[in-house]
Image (tube, rainbow, N blue to C red; front, side, top):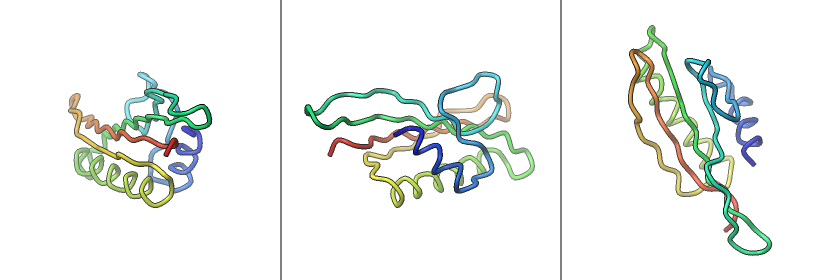
Length: 109
């Protein structure tokens, strides 16, 4: 499921590539992490996924650019997938790098 989400985000050309996994070498981007898979019944499972959005766009302003990106991703998740319990939050900054987190669940209901 996480690869399908990455494909959806890349297909929508958000300006940053969506990658499965996290790379400390990449200063900015969209990173998808499978935070937990838990069985609900014998026939279905629910995946918890986290998306880290890291932006260092000095021209537009990294905070504003990251916040807009998070809003766009959240709308895509709501309208193009069966994601639920979608929550986003500002994680913080590291110099001019701005970091947001989107957490959601998919499947299992």
